[in-house]
Length: 117
Image (cartoon, rainbow, N blue to C red; front, side, top):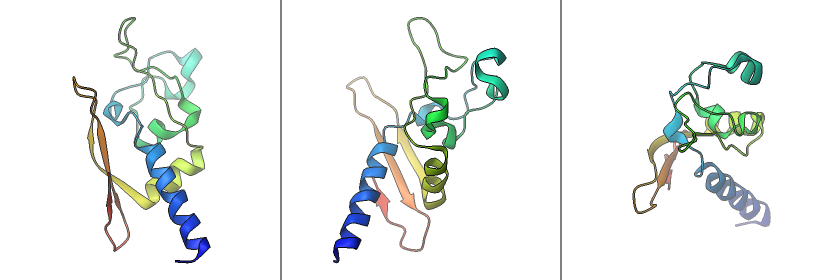
């Protein structure tokens, strides 16, 4: 393996690690209905891209309460989030259990069909 290939593999694994912390259990829920704060995203369903996109960091869902806040917490740029989901599919997401365990399984879209947890 060349240095360039090794660096590419490390970058890919780092990106997967970052993405695995996404709050994917919020997919399909709606943004809080506050047009002043959320603009055109107010009362719209949350998508895969929104979850990882730093643009929507700290946006709340409609289900958010004082004691149980549900905020988005993405760290990807909009372009990085778009490229990530062009390459990978979200196969399964297990939100935090009572013991604190959570897992996300991604699969590559190209023919190799590698699965990463």
